[in-house]
Image 1 (spheres, rainbow, N blue to C red):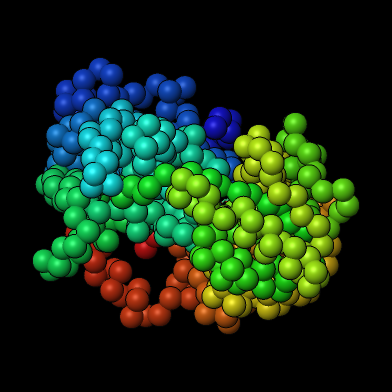
Image 2 (cartoon, rainbow, N blue to C red):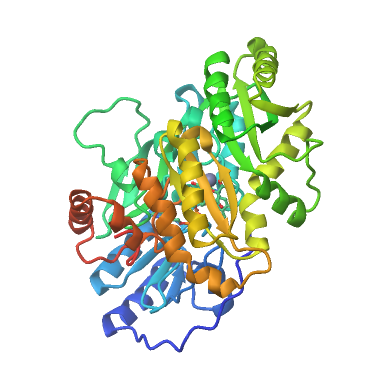
Length: 488
Ligand code: FAD
Ligand code: MLT
Ligand code: ZN
């Protein structure tokens, strides 16, 4: 994914302290010539986030080659009070992976730590370094006849250290869980430079606190993940996909319950897609096609999968589920993929949601979750609340409805005044998030907090939760050097 062009920032006034200047020189020696840069063009992709909303400055981009180098760099930074932004593929959607404008930090990229250290098919595990690209990990697992189920549209550029640090979700959570559930062990460089080697491939270990959970989803604020033991699964032998037009959102959720029950809980993916998403994809993404003849307001991309060699009657079961759902008026039309190519064409209509929205113009994104049972009511209530603020707003809703997670994004009105629309950002987000809160949901289901939702989070978390988070941060990173300005 190409980084957007840098915008001019006001002249930097930051001057490194003498200790920081000395630290930068020592870091260059630790990582060697290939391991650092201050060149503007080389630093550019590390300083701006995917949508171009957040852009910062850094004193240097450092790319250590191994855990020992990461530890040395972090120790030097701790001694000199030099703050660090850990970075993987820089596909964060909340400004978590880029430095602040002030320019005091270094970016520590894990990109050179990209080795698969070991794979143990019998234990269904593999040990990977933080800079491995997610798609590479999926491929290595597949070559060993195993399956690593984490899957998201950014998988060609995001890295496993970033995935674990954001507790990424994606399209297979319903069956296999979030990134957090796919990890057995971690290796972490702590903010003082010590290395915690927790690379155990155990499914049972009750020896005290589960330390790895602290770093999973911490967005680089508590330490740097350098390697992980990942859980693998038997490879699915058959995956059947259907692109279904549903009567409405309640019908979609009824379909989910039925598909889970009637397939023996073999639903792999359940993604809701509103019509406007399809329109934007057909408009902006070449070689995409509407799989159904007529237009409908809502669609579901539904997949059932089995690891059984003989399909175990899954295809027949899928056809029966769709037939009954059509008879009952839940599904209005459906296309069941007849080939892998057709299945991939369905996915092109799902995975390009973010890209097409970016190309369409301004949008106010909400990555929310509510209990699965509350999705229909939330969907309607939030929309009514948004319309009160911007009657011409357009709803671009899609996402992992099977997990209770929707990307409930509000696009600018056609031909409207962009600046006037963006001025309503705070009010629109508050309306959506207040509705989420009323349904006991979360304002960040999978993308994290970063800079984007740091203040917003304090509106919805209790004093107790915020206090415990601050206590943990202070215990591990008393100087506040790990990814400052993010999360808390
Ligand atoms: P980065 O963006 O580089 O970093 C993310 C955060 O983790 C930052 O706070 C950073 O400081 C920290 N970090 C990175 N590496 C480390 C490390 N080794 N140790 C400690 N901290 C670290 N997300 C989903 O959950 N589900 C989706 O379906 C999804 N779809 C997406 C689709 C598109 C098109 C795009 C652009 C993004 C999508 N995302 C999605 C968001 C993003 O891809 C994920 O958050 C991803 O996990 C980030 O990985 P990364 O390597 O790019 O991390
Ligand atoms: C996705 O599921 O495609 C991303 O998480 C979406 C987004 O909010 O752009
Ligand atoms: Zn998503």
